[in-house]
Every structure is written in structure tokens, then in C-alpha cells.
Image (cartoon, rainbow, N blue to C red; front, side):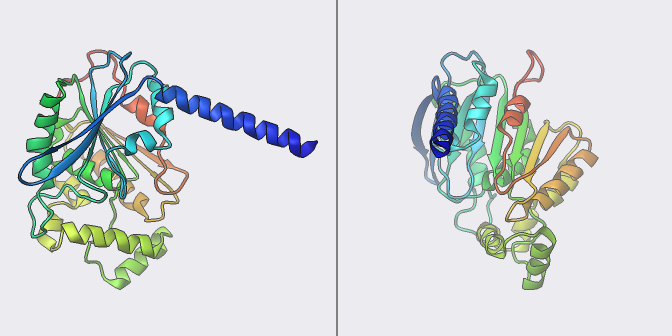
Length: 294
């Protein structure tokens, strides 16, 4: 009898969870496609709530192994939409494949995505989808958090707010020595396998010291950020298996020291822990709060 009662309770909780989850999906339409030029193919999905009058546009960058549909598959998706209720912005997810970094032109064959996104993807999609955002917003997680950091640092005028969830910002050079990697693993209690895989990806897009110097988020933050930069939300799990919380925290502290508006959230959890409610609140504007993006 006890086992039966426990099972009924578990099924009730599970049913309630799915009901809550489906409520978040109920009014969200998805439209996906591909655009291309002579350089890259870029996949996208546009998520919109037909009941929302919100004119903001949130660009979303997925993490390693994801794709343009990852937004709707994230565990934090329901919390975000339940917080937004009927005032959700349009969400435009972007993907160049399962693994990609917004690198400016470097010796890597896959570099140049940064310029491609800024000069081709943004104007092409906003024109094609007939979107004139009141505020252009940016959110990226993990690998996508690194990509979002590049836009925040190099093109701050494009976005009214930027959020980095468990961003791929660490304190290691892509060509770090074994001793440096070992010390990092011990210091952050991270997993050496994940750390090495991350460095392999970074090294592929930033194969030399010059290209990394032009992309290193922490060092660029020290040089570029000023009080006019858009509000920034950074979060990371304290048990992140790649140790990203160390670099994310340093990045947040540097941005604060340079006068930027920064919200830093060290969350309890693994990679990639995200507080959906907090993200939704961060991207919610009171009326006539910030100027529209250029």
C-alpha cells in the first residue's frame, strides 16, 4: 500500500511538471530555415508568441553539440516563458553547426564567423523575417556564452542587454602546458578530459598567440569595457566540470571595475546550470527604458 501511494504521488508530481512544461510551450510558434552566402551556411529558428506585443528580439547562441532548435529543448525554457507570461520577446536562435566560435579572421579555415554574423546574418535575417526590434538582446550558454562575450566586447552598440550563462571563459591559454592544465584542474576541481576538449576547440579557431590575444575575453575586458557598455548578466555553476566559474567570475569583476552594469550569479550546480527565472527578469524592460539598438 505504501509503495502504491508513493507511486501515485510520483505520477502526480510528474504529471504536474509536464503540465507546467507544456504551458510554457502552448503559445510559442517556431519557424526555422537556413541562409547562406559564399562563406557560410547559417541555420536559425524564430520562436514567437502570437499573444505577445513585446517588440524586443533576443538572439540565442547554443552550447557545444547543440543546434538551432536547442532553445526549445533547454530545461530552463519553461521557467523563462512562465516568467515572461504573455510578454515574451521574439527569440532568434543561430547556429553554424554543432561546434563553432565567433572568431575574426585568423589562420584557421573556419575563422571569419564574427564578421559574417555582424555584417551578414543580423541584417539579412531581420530584413527577411521583417523584424525591427525595439531592443536587440543577446543570450549565450557555454560555447554560446563565449560567442556572446565576443559581441559584447567588440560590438556593444548592437545589443541593449547581454547574458552569459556558464560561458566558455577560462583562465587557460589554448596552448597551455600540461603543468598549467594540471594546476587549473586542481584549483577548479574540474575534469581534465573536459578541459582538454575545450582547449582543443579553442585552439582550432585560435591557433596562434596573436589570434587568441584578439579574442581572450578577460584581457579584452580590461582594455575595452567602459561605463557605456550594455547591462551584463553572468552566471555559472559552482561545480562546473570545466571550471568555467573561475574565468566567468574574473570577467564579471573586471567588467564591474571598468564601470559596467554587471549582475553576477554563482549558482549551485554543474555545467550548465542556468536560472531561467533570473534570465527572463533580466531581459524584461519597463516601458521606454533603454534606447533601441543601432
